[in-house]
Amino acid sequence: MTRQLLLEGLTDAVGFVVGSLLGFGLGRLVGLELFAEGYSAGSLAAIALVGLGGGMGLQAVRHLRGRSTPPGDAP
Image 1 (cartoon, rainbow, N blue to C red):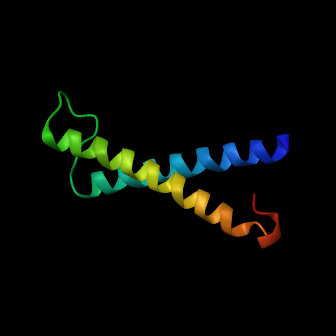
Image 2: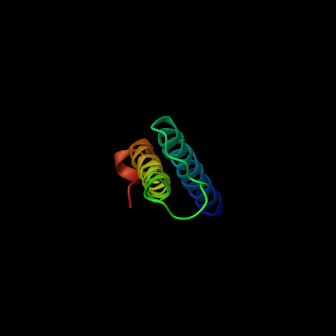
């Protein structure tokens, strides 16, 4: 049980970080600067992209992890 919870936490963290980095990269690709001075519209859009990317990465990992369990083992 403890090993399963550790694996779940680690995969959630990896999914969130990878998704956040993808959101950051997408923002940089379209010219948004996350760490710009002040809170301009571009900076706020970049912050939103990082948050959305992190959430989407987390949900993607949870979806993939849910698929990998055999049908009889689902809670």
